[in-house]
Length: 351
Image 1 (spheres, rainbow, N blue to C red):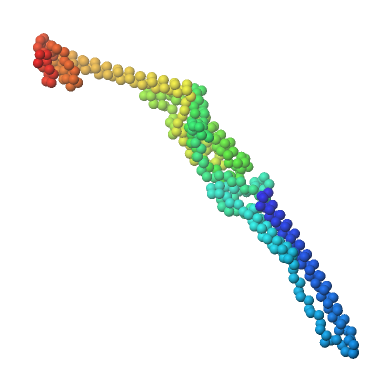
Image 2 (image 1 turned 45 degrees about the vertical axis):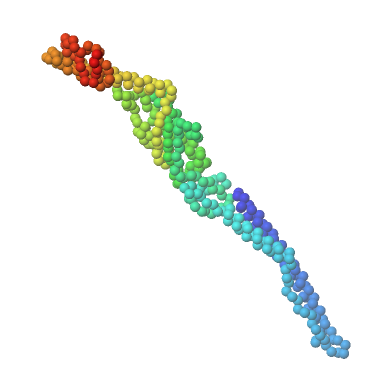
């Protein structure tokens, strides 16, 4: 029971007690003064009835003054003011113990002696003082299960070949306001809803979606043939929405990264290295084929015109000159020629 309500009851008892004292004190003083008035009136009548000496009546004699109305004493006035003050404070405390404010985007669950009796929307409400209001957060929640040192961590799942992976997952959800009463009955508070319902079903959905996921399934180009992370996120969202029911509204699930265990990651790296070597070997075969084709073309050209070799030699000499390489002494591109070849920009011996 709230402390303000208990205080209002105490103040009400004090107000009643001081009121009784006030009334009893005022009535006692009034009774005493009434008796004095009766005695004074009787004495006056008796004086009028007895004649004075000389046979004359004393009707003209002075009569006693009429009694003044009773006045409350200091104690009576203090008791009255104390009663009024206690009554006013009791009303204020009683109102304060009944008033409650439910925060924005929250749902208030009203319980009476431990039994839920209804739910309250956000705003100001008056409830019986003996009832208790527990708030449930109805705002959008974002739970980031990522590999870090924070409160959450990535979620471990079983994938193909009995390997394990740790999945970074971000989920956005909120409770449905009409279902807040039922959620409170089942889970008692908001943290239990998150841990026992949302996170548990998210783990189950991730394991169901990733059970056939094979990181080693790649094509000859080295591209993965397994579903992409966007597709996996959509599958997890559909599965958890089907599992969790209508009490929780799951808005989105995002899977940005999948962390494989050390053994699986080493296999993935080795496989990608083999794919790279295969592509290099394939490119080498293509290069050799093109080189052979070029050699055949050159041989056919030489058989028809020997000067083709001379032209090729001159081209090679030009490349050597452009790269700043020295030309061997006595080298000649002309068959049977004994004179040195003069190339512009290159000095010859003895020059």
